[in-house]
Length: 118
Length: 180
Image (tube, rainbow over all chains, first blue to last red; front, side, top):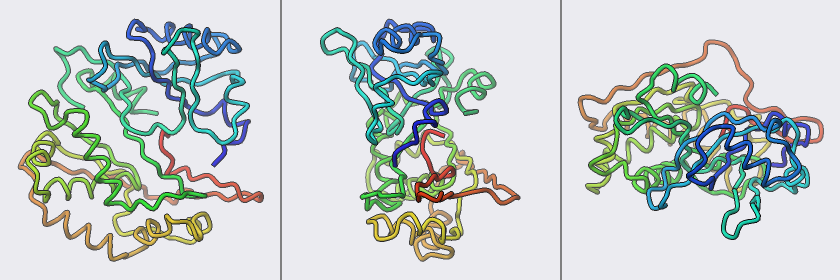
């Protein structure tokens, strides 16, 4: 199902494959803004940043949830896709945006010493 | 989304994780039934190590169709032949089911989206008093869960929108979309 263009400002996106060095929500907005090139970081609202559950990754990448105040062209050119690769100008370092949220997505970080429940 | 924005602030020792699966009804080519969706969830739990010795206890929140998938998963885990299944079940402390159509739901609006698609069988299984739902209910009651396992059921007391079809026949399914 193609989401009407005017709905993109109300759509929550998942952002995967963030480098492990990304820690804060500002880090996420800055990196994604640079990669997209047509949306300023202040127009990216970041709601969560967490370490992926993929234990086979070393180091583990981060996953975030974001919304856009102004929609990037990679999304508005959409032809019914539900995920988009965002190149970063670095080899093998694309970010992955999606709206399908398939699989497991952690939404917060808990210190290992205090982590009691999922 | 309260499980992302509010819950971690109230329960600081809890990591919240959402599980998304394909529930698209309109133009869907999927022929997965609830038992298939349940097996996929179990595979994910195994893949991410919830059958291992360091796994943290899990409390599930199941909404709408997701609650049925969860219920079917619990039945499969309780009755499956594998050691892995028992290990996963042992870390599941319980579940809160929100608005889960345990007895089925009205079909007319959903049928308008799935007509002739492979996933019509999934909708058949969600019909009021369907054989599948009766069987699932019986299997759930008959399954042996450990003593620490608790279920809670939350439901609405007013009508809510399920599917809207606009004039151009595009549709939205607010109760079934993932990532809400």
